[in-house]
Amino acid sequence: MDEPALIREAQRGDLDSFNRLVLEYQSPVYNVAYRIMGEADSASDATQEAFISAYKNIGGYRGGSFKGWLMRIVTNACYDELRRRKRRPAASLEALAVVDTGPDADGEASLVSEAESPESHAERSELADTIQHCLDTLPDDQRTAVVMCDVQGLDYGEIAAAMRTALGTVKSRIARARLKLRDCLQSAQELLPAAFRLGEERP
Image 1 (cartoon, rainbow, N blue to C red):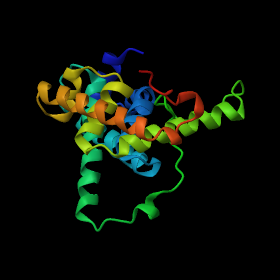
Image 2 (cartoon, rainbow, N blue to C red):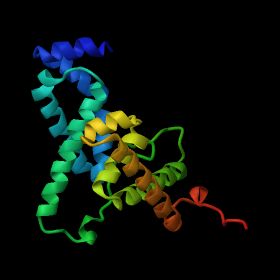
Image 3 (spheres, rainbow, N blue to C red):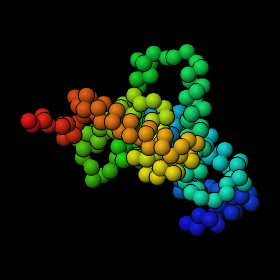
């Protein structure tokens, strides 16, 4: 894919070129939205809003990481929705605790492989659900930062640009998020598949 050429054509109004960019980046954009929002419907809405916004504003793209530019847009879309939720009366946790089909532990949409046994698929799904549960316990800014770093592999500079904050703040958020995730996963070992549970610590 000749990304710079596609971007130039998209900036000239060529929808086919923009659609090729969408196909290239829709999976990582959706996965970031899913990890931030924690549910498939909200992630799909945020992804759609992000690409609509990207198309409308691609004339303002001035170079650098196009992926990072898209991540900033989808992050803002997620933040907007989270802020709207905070202004509305909170729903009960029981009402929100529904089975959801989102990305698996590797950050990609869940697909059943013919080479994967039903038991392995169930175990992988269980692990992904536990990780998402722990992500959901993090503050919005920490969850967003650690998802962009550890799920999507963006560097600190790209994350700082996407979140419009200082580099040191990003590093701090990621460090705190990782500690909280570690503690959450250790305290939720009964939710983990047996193969992923930590053994008893030895003296």
